Length: 607
Image (cartoon, rainbow, N blue to C red; front, side, top):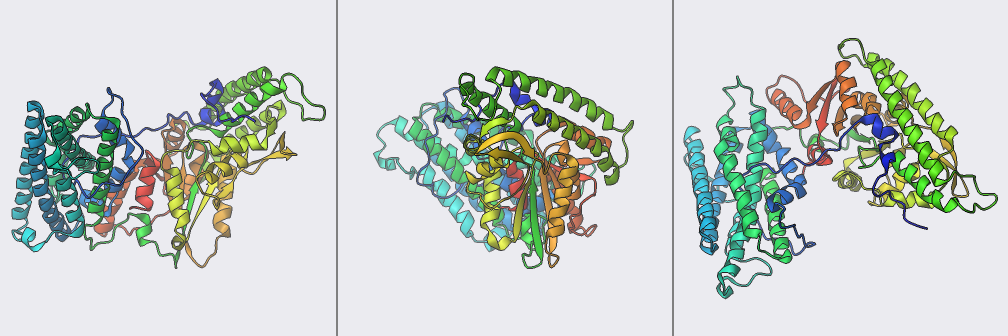
């Protein structure tokens, strides 16, 4: 029996819930322009070779590949406190002292790399990079003078994490890289040039990270905010000159790596990743004496609190909508049924008839969905009231049920083999970071957390096998189920969750069934209009993706959409200033937006 994951998608891929959300899938942000601050410790033993096309940008590719690490840095308690202006001065002094140790090592590494470069332009670029590091040291000295802490560097010896950073960087710049000859044994200028390329591989991620952080923090500075204690730091790393320096460093990495082999590029990837991981470690090692709102689990007390993670499935966890996959299975397997269908087998349409039927169903759904969305919108924007939105979405629920009835009546779901569905589920591509996030929660038994997936998906077997393929067999799946006779679908569905009202009912029932001896903290992650009620009812609602219909309906009913990091910085500022306690509460009318599961992982779990 053939493998059935749809590839490439037919026009049917625009079907049903895909039309429901009108979303374009998010992509990783472009590599920002960043800084040399904390390159770090000994590269991992090995990883799969990463050979990049000659016309590709290595720095950009690596920045995107290791997105999770730079998001962990952004959402670290240190970054949140610094961005909000609430960071205790003693913590900042400690950070500056440690960074001075690193910057001195960085300047020396640039000097060593410059000696290894055999190209005048490369030597000049590395020299300029070194000047930038020295300029950064001067800026740090101005911080020392401003806060009357001239002895802070002397009083703060290099800590373990900073030492790992400096040792890694200097070892790389000295040619102590796995697979590379000892520096004295490098016979040709080209061989020595590899050391310069490897050193840039260790420095570039830190340049990129700091420019990214500076830009992110700068967007949150109020134009009238003159008393932010770290405004000078933020303005330095978001400045045009620093951004340009970071871009030049990325360009230099691309240039030096151009003549390298696939194995050598793989070495640069390992060095880049190690530098980024140790940068994350550097941020999380800063001593904080103040409470922070992230990671969410930091203040979570398993003895008193019960963390409830809820998630939609289609296009929240997946790249492709499950209805499109089931349609593809029906069409592909029907090709074998066009000729001789055994007596007694559940009757099926031919593949041509199925393709035509799915096309008609998809077109009708899309047109009527648009009409339904228009009909539920208020004549003018209203103040947020949960009950008002609930009433409006009852109409959408009626529409969804009528559309599902048409699917059943058409007979397009008859005759699908359960094993084919499971095979497709095992090969289903999920969003980056989704599985690792759920795995980390499921594996931490002391966290006292549960994961519930609420989905419109027509067939629970597809969801269960998709997660099972990632080692997640203990998730709570709440969805619909195909009716089978001897492992062949009858075309009927046992309905459990097919509308926004069904979803919120299931959500409420789950919370109601929880033990009352602990306080529940609920987080819901979703991406479509069908998730709105659950998103708003949860203590924390996180919208993933860019569904236009979700935002349109929500906005017209008074819902505010706030970027997750922006919302956390504001909440940290209010929390530190005593203006509000750190309490998460549902039905506030505020939803947080995230571009990927990496953001969610960083916020909830941290490092």
